[in-house]
Length: 284
Picture 1 (spheres, rainbow, N blue to C red):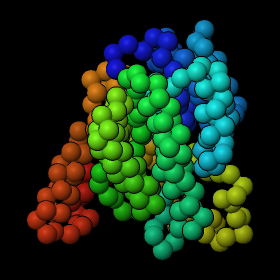
Picture 2 (cartoon, rainbow, N blue to C red):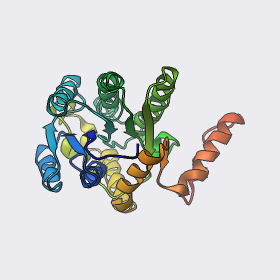
Picture 3 (cartoon, helix red, strand yellow):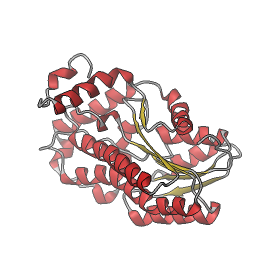
C-alpha cells in the first residue's frame, strides 16, 4: 500500500503505546481512523493528539466479540469502508505454567489472539466485498518466534498470533484476494504494557485467589516492568509499521539482536534438538 490519504484504518489498542503512535502517524498521512480501546480516558487523550484528523473513537473490550462487532458496524456506518486493519491490542502476564491462574490464561488468549480472530472474521469479508487493495497487520511479538522462561501464556498467545496470520495469508492467496497480510514481532519497547493489570476487566478478576498476593506474582510484575522500562524507545515503531505496509513486508522484525535465537530455535527443530535455556545466557 503506497497511498494512505483518505484510507480508513481500524486500530485496536489505540489508547497507549504502539496504538497511539501508529494513530498519530496515520493522521499525519491523512487517514481516517476508527480507534478502539478499553481505556476510554486514555483513548480520548489519543484523539486529542490527532489534530484535524477524522476520527471515530469507540471504547470497547476486545475480549468480547459483540463489542468488537459493534465497533466495526459503527466504523462502517461512519466511513463506509475499512482499508487497513491493525490488531494492536495486547497484554502481558508473566507467570510459570503451573502457577498462573486459569483466568489469566483465558484473559491473555482472548486479548492477544481471539481479538484478532474477531476483527478478521468480520473485516475480511468487508475488504473482499470492497474489491480494493487492503492490508491487515497483526501485532504479535518476538515472543511469537522464540521462547523464554517465565511467560508461557504470553508465548502461547503470540505464537498463535503468528500462526494465525501466516495461515490467513495462505487462505487469502488461494482466492487471489487483494489483501496484504503482515505480522509484527517486536522485542521489548518502552510502552504501557507493564500496566496490564490496570486494564483487567472484572470478569477476569478474583481478588480472593492467593496467587495475586504471592511472591511469584510480585516477581512477575517486577520483571514485566523492568524489561519494558529498559526496552528500546518507541520512536521508530510507527515509521517501521508504515514502511512495512508500503513495502508489503510480511514479517516485521524490530530487534535484529534476537535473530540468532530465532535461527537457533529453527535449527534445533529440524535437527532433532530440544529447548535449551542456556542459549539465552547473556542475551535475555
